[in-house]
Length: 112
Image (cartoon, rainbow, N blue to C red):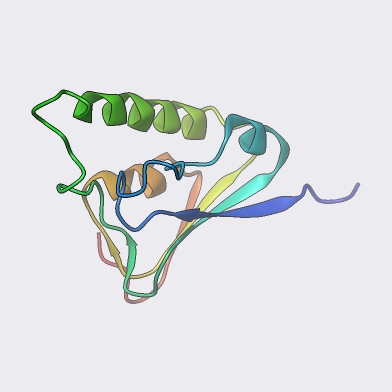
């Protein structure tokens, strides 16, 4: 049998900085493909939430937490393997990705 398809998903360096960009792979992708989670830069895999994007006063910060929880559940329930390739810094909420992955590949300069 042929190996399953593999797809990479670039994890945002700062979660919530660009609201038009998803913070995790789609459920459909997790059903149909091995997913490789990679960082956006060589310096960091993911630094967690962007404090400047957190809108505490109007409560919209909670919307981001709901999305964060949904991404965690979808990674944990993925039908295909999820691999996190970590290089550089992985901090705060960015720890979601390696913690939920089935396999973590960390470079020598990865820090958690």
